[in-house]
Amino acid sequence: MSETPKARTRLILVTPAVKDAVSFAPLLEACCREGDVAAVVLNLATDDEVMALSAIRIVSTHLQNIGTTLLLADMPALVEAAGADGAHFTSVDELRGSRTKLAAGRLAGVGGLPSRHDAMVASESGVDYVMFGEPDASGKRPGFSALLERVAWWAEIFQLPCVAFAGSIDETPQLAEAHADFVALGDAVWSAGANAPQAVARASELLLQPEPAN
Image 1 (cartoon, helix red, strand yellow):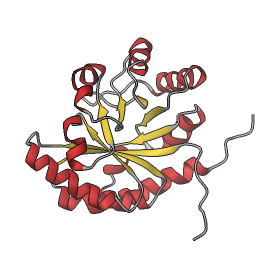
Image 2: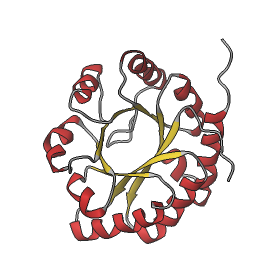
Image 3: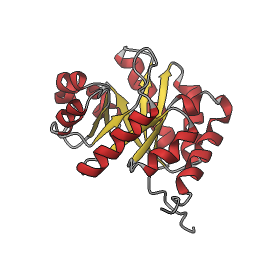
Image 4: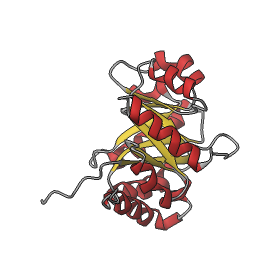
């Protein structure tokens, strides 16, 4: 098999709150096969541990042969039992309160970082990445210019990988040019419904385009 070119910046898919893993997992798998998807952050609509474990295992089965990392949103206690790769914490408070539930050796990342100070505090906690720009509980995101500035600032000063959340497919290359290590996609993909894999393919194409000459 010939090697395909790797994007300088890779994609992360952030799922909606999944209610039916049986129907969602094949779509997620198709999305991951259509682009250079490094990881999936899985959100679930249930707090029931048994139902959550079942859903995670269904999703994990669809991802296991692709090489995509599976991170559970705010469910660190289930990571080991479900065979996931790690957890994504949606705030520093969640990280502080639940990090000890994450088994040693598993990945951990954190978002919900409204200020530079929050980001630096998170980095000192030993996480594997920080995320900027994701929507809050009301769906509000920071302005795009502010997000670009935050990503560029982080990339210039810190070695810890940075994930930038794109509100649309068109934002993907600009965030990469600001030196985000990963670009996260949520509704920009899932709002396309059955065409979500094509949205991922388009984002990957944009990431592989050469940077404009200075």
